[in-house]
Length: 379
Image (cartoon, rainbow, N blue to C red):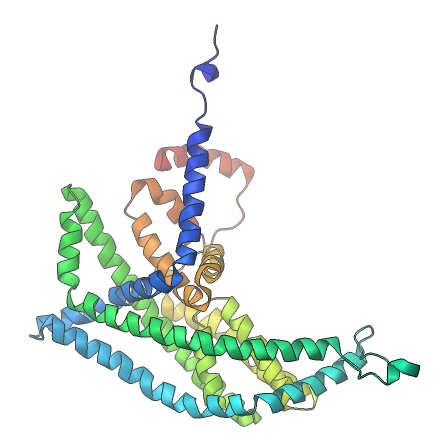
């Protein structure tokens, strides 16, 4: 007599094919970054700015004109900032060789103080006639040349991608009703149409609220850090204020990068240990106050996400698309949560995305008691 398991074999081939399909999609998205990144960024900006276009339309401004006004306002708010950063950035680029030499001098002092990292010992005999080489300095010099080429290449690619994003953003904002009508018409059932419209409205509301609130918080942090660095005597405090505000849009990894950059800047600018550490310590204090006191009050629990989900999303999108992917990781996660709230089969994923902010560690008995309810809720 055959067993029940023999009559219903596990479809391992189907799961293997699904896994291969997911891997193929992931690597295709990674390789198609120059094409897909402007599209996704434009779509997210459209979700955030579409309510403003509707608000203007209700007051008699056509969508074409309203979209143009918003895009011009967006460019107008970033253009003066970019112009104000052009001079400090050019000065920093001209002073880069001097800065690197100062940094190497500071590194030599640190290497002399740390056993095992000191400079190569002076050679004697015939070896003394050959020029002495320092592997660390040679590596930094070669990396500096490679960095120059990388900056020029990435700068041109960024200009092309930014132009495509702005143009696509205008067309999406100007024709949002046409696009939405075509998407809804493709859905056959009335209930699915209602879920789709509700999800889009929720995504627009949540992403817009997150961008505004986090933008205000990060802008304030950037202004505070600019003032603090100016008082500490750091060169180009305006540039550092903008770098701080932009990098803070990337949770966890962005503040860590700012701390490391400020530590390197202090190392190349100051001489004493207290002065070297003061910029990084000042940012650590400001960011600690912002992340633990200000952001929870301003952003609110409605947009609270699981820290694990946020960190994994930043790592995943950063691996896919670099800095652009890390910047859009949280808005994509917010949009995914809006979808999970309206699709019954994704409610369990929603629980993982939202997390539990105020729950203590559960006992084994409570977990066993919840299992039956969880099976009924999530199928």
